[in-house]
Figure 1 (cartoon, rainbow, N blue to C red):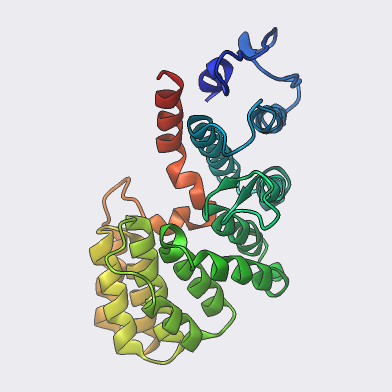
Figure 2 (cartoon, rainbow, N blue to C red; figure 1 turned 120 degrees about the vertical axis):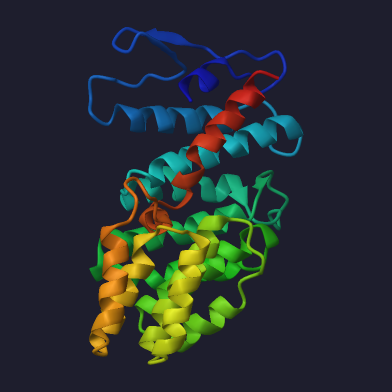
Length: 290
């Protein structure tokens, strides 16, 4: 990412003012003090400020708009992976609310257009409730508001609905969670979102007392991500709870014998866009070399 940032020209004929950082021996367009442990946050902040200070406002140069938007989304993915919702809000969601909008500003203020900003806003509050469960009641309303807005747009609808459903399930509103999951578009191209939708359906059905349907939903989640442990663990616990020891043992054995290194998309749920980080980095580098 640093090599992309240090060479990128955000407007024709305009080159970045750079300096050599004596500590990292890298060229950075910032004044970050790399002797501090949070040096990378300085880089993120300086990068954002530089990106929004380009000569042409959004809407004047579509190529620059595309690069800047991808830059912001890449930075957000990086922040999300730290599992620090305070950073996601302070250095990600809040600074971008003016620069990026789902639709053009009513007063005509130049801005980047991408409904993703609503999904990002919802995630910022949801991640807080995931890392600190005691904040669920206070954080959920803001997250749900953003997710409701994100469901209005095709590009963000599926994930927004799935994340909304999981918040509702966690709030004890299983019936609403199931109704929300019923609205998820099918097919869903994102394999993570597909798996999450089936896993969360299992949990909501279980909470609603529909145990046989919950088992089927968990099996469907396994079909979406073979080798994932969460559905098998859920089924083992469910079957144990209703005294079906043979079935509980079967699913427990599947977990114990799962392949080493097998991935479970549930483990990435609380890091949001971080699952896109490497792809976005590659696209930034490709755009930079055009």
